[in-house]
Image (cartoon, rainbow, N blue to C red; front, side, top):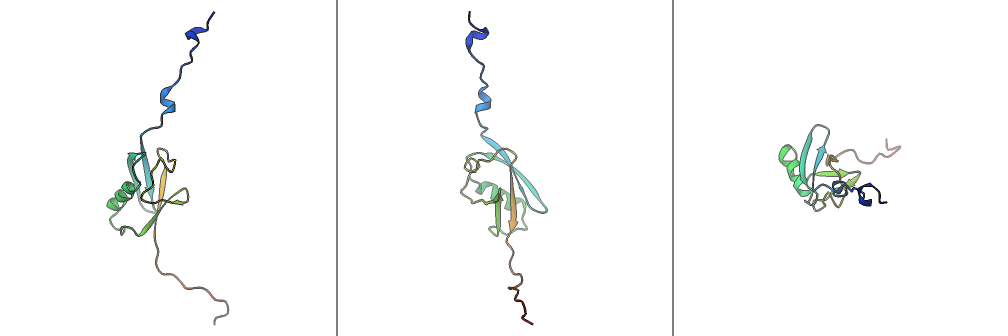
Length: 106
């Protein structure tokens, strides 16, 4: 006697397929920008959206980080193994600051 269903197990084909689109959130201390893109699109697209929506930031004067890794323009979400809802951190470069502190210089 064969088991019910003819011995075949039901396989959920959707569980094995990763989504082609994902929404990534870019955050800094003041702003949050969400953008939906394909898994294979270069992250340059997301960076361009950020600079367009946050006009007071000069293009190219910043760093985008994902899990502590600096994100480059030619990287893709699939290459970074990103998932829907993941977040990039945005940091502007800071110029200036104090020179080295030398003990006993006074």
